[in-house]
Length: 284
Image (cartoon, rainbow, N blue to C red):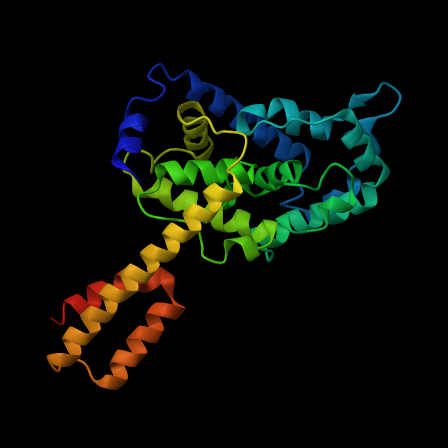
C-alpha cells in the first residue's frame, strides 16, 4: 500500500463516529445471522417464507431484505427497487437454491458470485445484491469485503496499490473470477499497512469510500492503460530475474537445468516470485 494512503488512514475518523456506526451494524449482523442461521444450518434455508422476502398485502419489504438493505446499510449500501423483491418472491425456489450456494463452504467466492443470479430479474448485472448476501453469510471467513461494485474495487486498487495489480487475463475472466481476484488484492493491500492491518474489513472499506470517493466507472481506455502497464512491469521484472539467473549460472552457482526450472517456476507461480528472488539472492 502506498505511504500516502497509510498517512490518510492514520488521521481517519478521529472522533470515532464511523467506527461506532460500523460496530452497531456488526451487532445487527449477528442478530440477522441468528434469525437466518443458513451458514450454520443450510437446511434452515427451506424455512425462508415468501413473506420474509416481500409482503404482497402491504407492498413492503420482508424482514430478510429489510436487514440486508436497511439495518445492515453501514456494511455496504444497495440501491434497489421493490420490484426486485417481488421477482425474488415469485422465484423463491430458485432463490433458495442460490442461498444454498452462498453458504456452501466448498464453493469459492467466484463460484458464489457466478451462480445463476441473473435468472431472477434484478439480481444480474454486477450482482450487487448477491454480493451483499454473500458477504453477510460469509463474513466470519475473512475472505469477503463489503464493496459490491466491480468498478469501485478497480478504482480503489488503482489508488492504493504501490505496484500494478490488474491481471493480464482480466478481460477474459468471469464476473465472479474478477470479483475474487479484486477482493484478494484489496485484502492483501489492507494487511500490508501496520495502520490498517488491525482494522475490521468494513471499517477499512468505509475509509476508502470516505477518502477516495470513486467515479461512476473506470473507462475501457483506463483499463487498457492499466493492463499495458501491468504487462510492461511484468516483462521488466522477468528480464531482471533472467539477469539474476544468468549471473548465478556464470558463477557456477546453478546448473543450466536449474536455470530452466527456475524460469519455469517464475512463469507458473506468480505468488512465490519474491520468495524465489530472495532465495536466489542468497546464492550470490
